[in-house]
Length: 350
Image 1 (cartoon, helix red, strand yellow):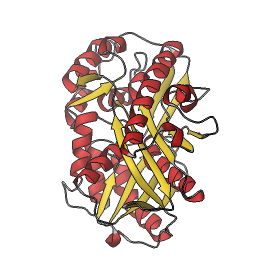
Image 2 (cartoon, rainbow, N blue to C red; image 1 turned 90 degrees about the vertical axis):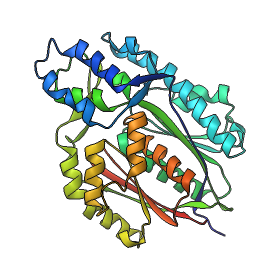
Image 3 (cartoon, rainbow, N blue to C red; image 1 turned 180 degrees about the vertical axis):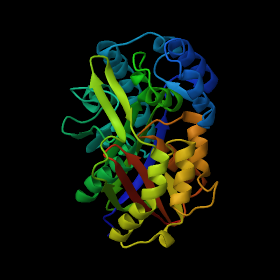
């Protein structure tokens, strides 16, 4: 019997408010340009991201006012609970399961704080059992989609026959800041959107797509590359180094190292499925992984349609690749705070 975890279902969801990139640029200009002389020079970032539109849990007018922790947290709880229920129910329906069939819930989120955690807050409305195991995971950032899938797969593998629900959910737009007049804040405003992905995993029975193995690499001395600062206004984005340059230089050897621990090599991988941090990051990934320019086509399409949603974004890419037919073996990759590379190998039987 194969005890590796099968991907039983996968679903995605976005909140109701769609913002076109030109609309966000106009809003950011109205908020920042008069107080930040460098804004116009940096405004070309909005056109260079490759993003057409993104989604948010609040109407765009909400973001035009300065917000503090209490308002951001209220918006987070309201928006995250609704999105959690929607995406989880989609994944459950696709797996032909009810919420009461779920034995373990893994919730990945780094863009808001909730105690009790999100899966506890929605348990009564969605129908989780009272004995459901809850595994909330905070702080993985953009790596959370791959790391969360790996955690969920290992939990499923440890209890064959049990159903594990993964929900990766991020409301990045709620971190928009009016007080931080910096390039990092303009970059964040040009890139990030809200979204969620959910998957059901189960080990011990049939399944066409299995999480074969997983691995990570944490670089020492890289805490300043990406993350949050925390102050009375809320989260503030940290971008201290040029991420595409780091990707170009470091990711190739890191992925080779991770694959080696899996007893695989890049020649064994038919398709890399990558978290699309932005168009420059995608191009850097293609270079680092020795791929032809344009290979990461679904990654470019997802960033264009949704922006960078942090953790769930790579699962949006997986959804598109899966819909068109997964190859025999693919490797999910994502980068996040730490600075960390997270990988998961998927084995697919047609």
